[in-house]
Length: 78
Image (cartoon, rainbow, N blue to C red; front, side, top):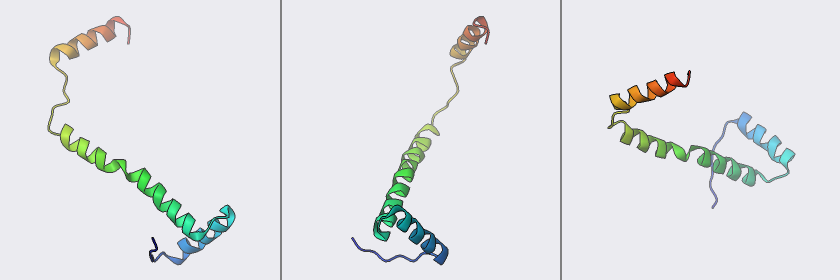
């Protein structure tokens, strides 16, 4: 799919240098950059959803489990 975008001159010039250095077309460079960006940020929505779910529940340990855990750690010298 063809699209038109506007980028600041310094970004365009840096991308031009990089595409020449990598020996790839400008289109390929921009497509790869967008793909990498999308992949890097795709987990953010999942994280936001998990944050919403876990914000509704307490993360405190049951007092008995906490005491037992601390006792085991004390016995092991930690």
